[in-house]
Image (cartoon, rainbow, N blue to C red):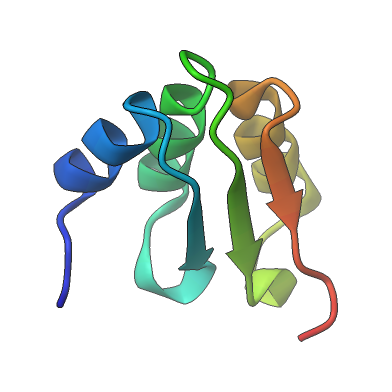
Length: 74
């Protein structure tokens, strides 16, 4: 089941944790989803980050305010 970015934002805002593949989303979308984790402290794990720049990772991480985990194993 493919969920929209708006749906993932709603899930994160409600406190649901997510594991997402960065290749499926734009950086701006990941920033939106990460920012939504702040309301209830939901955790967001992002995999396949090798295609993202350090600046993008910083933007996403800052938006999540400590709730984002970058999976560097893949």
